[in-house]
Length: 361
Image (tube, rainbow, N blue to C red; front, side, top):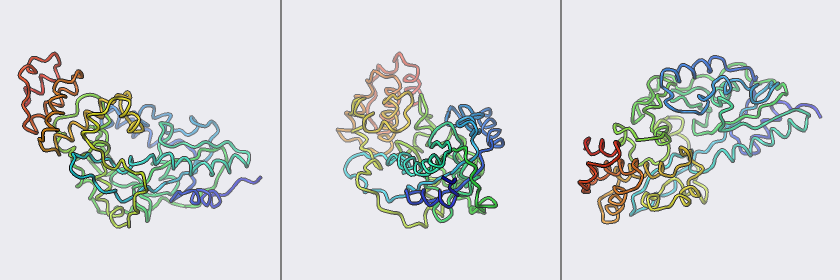
């Protein structure tokens, strides 16, 4: 069976639900590796592991598939209209890239491309949302889109609300684009100006230590200087994409039935046990799979959006006595935000984090 062309592979990907498909060589991304190492060594990556854990691996496709010759890169457009926000309860916002498992859809759409290559006698494997590949660099090389100042890839006519993946293969697939996609950002700085914490420190460069999308996934205490900026976000942050003109001008599709994770009832998170939280929200990245990090984020949202009703006050008072020191400490901050009385005995708490919160307040 002859090796399929990029036109044939693109047709398969588009028919399976992708919005763009392109081909690129599987040569190492040497410049990207150097930049990942620079950002890691200067602290800009904070404790992020994704592609930063082992840059020499994530920038060399041959490490994932020895003998790799080509990347067939695909983008899946997840832009939707948010479902209505629940009323009469404190609500937390979820970033659009986490409303559903978009990567499951992406992998399924890439599989027919991989299968066509396998049927032609080649090795082919789907890579998406893994440490094995710098997916944005691959998409840029494949002509999927341009590097935005937000550091995201923008697909012409689509925008940046896409997830990216690739089929890595030992087949030599000729690309059908001669040059990189032209920079569509030009003089626009909406994403830099719109970041609530100033995390985009220069075009295309993110300081993860300020980025809310990373901080909600990071271990330990949430930095006090960014707690109010977190607002109602419990997972992720879309601000740099929400203000991006190519994203704003598109007609958004309605959210599909069952996409109920755009909003989360904060009190339900704080009332749920570990098994319930992991069953519902476990596909999110949670440090050490510890649901207390979901509770930490929910507490901060409560302090930012709630009124001190009897139900809310009771939850805060319960968390001020929580057995986990990290949650007691964040509950002190929430109590100060909402005017809930903090017990005097917490000034002598065994936890330094709790005592520090008392002193700071």
